[in-house]
Image (cartoon, rainbow over all chains, first blue to last red; front, side, top):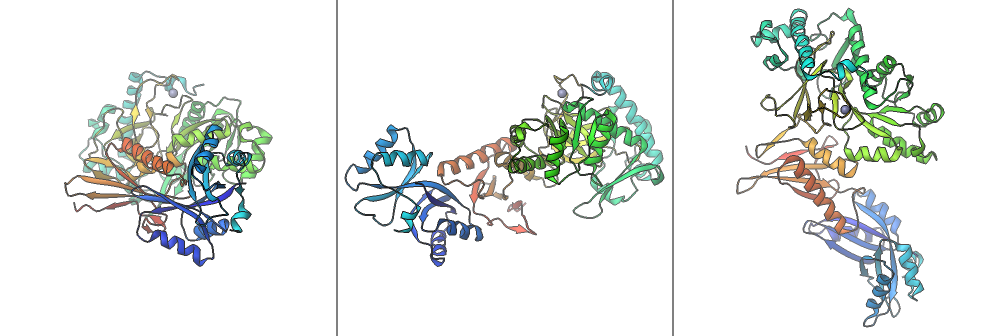
Length: 143
Length: 433
Ligand SMILES: [Zn+2]
């Protein structure tokens, strides 16, 4: 139940982010979720797209450093304390969240979040065992 | 075992006497037999009577790669071509190639030091050795061949390449010793896994790796991959080929055969000896070679040396792994910086060498600033910022430890470092000196 996240190494240069995004747009690849983590000199753009392997090829061809990691996308109840509950369930099972971010569009009544875990398989199983809906690659394409 | 126990465990005093005798004879020999050296000695007003002990070696002029090229092909030889039984040529990036030649006595010398080398790495007389260094004009293959022949080992001269066959031969004949470049050894590990061979069950127990710089990290990788002892061998064709120095099984520096290859460590700027243990350029004098003996040959390799006795019992000095090259030295805040030192750090951290560039600038407050730009490729990229920051901090810390000056490290996108002729430009000096 893992999905693929594409991460891109970016220097903090003006216009670099929009260049990368429009490169994807021109190739007909849609960004479903996106976040940027940065330091003073560089940043890492992480995203979930509808065609991850095409995106990876595109970056490789254009000499952009990118990699693919397995992440888990799960629906989290969009109500006060909804996320806290999920995080507690995970930490009770000794699963660490490295980082997380939200999807651009809302999925049903729930918020759709991307989680990066050390052990995505285990984390996905725990989430499901606790009644949360975990979205697979097909689900992402259908968004 | 120690191949030549009486020489290799000799007291330092006896060793010095031998070196002194050899040097006096060598000076007379080249003066009488090599016009180029006679000219050099005369130009430096050196009289043969000035050279009575090995300590007098500092009075003699250096020999450089330039001298080799200028005197190409046979100008630096002390024997006529007809006395040579073998010649080797290595291609240079510019100008003439480097030619070396061996008399029959030189081949005996090479066999002797290579037998010492094999023993130093842990070879036993009934061993089988797989020699996967290239045979041919390159000195690697034949050098090991002569040493193994001298020792009476069973030789499998596979030469380099044809990995599948190398692995098949290893499986069929179970050699305990492998000689090749360290990168080829790692490449073979990958290949073995793909063929369903477990490298950890391989018969190779000792590896003798050289002909290219490699890091301690790479040693760890090789030892873990093959479950073998990975030792470092050093040599250069100008001196003899492989067999100038070799690590013993304690892996605490390479024993240099100083009874025949006399080592000095000098400051490449001043030409003066550095204190024991300090980094400097390795200079070697071939004390007994006949065909093309060289006096104070500048290897351009940066190393340190210790004369402390080794646990293995050998008394020869020990030279560190190569820490850099003098070829492209830059001076920053009075400190010699070699791009290759930075290369080594990066190689050690990543196992591969990313594109990098050193930018030196003189800031307003007049202190030279060193910035190291490192291109981030897929091998070192992580989606986790903390890992990237840790990588950057680690590179900074290790480079500072090696250079003893503060540096800034910048991780940059691929292809942002300027390339000239496909190679990235290593140093950008923005200082107006
Ligand atoms: Zn030793």
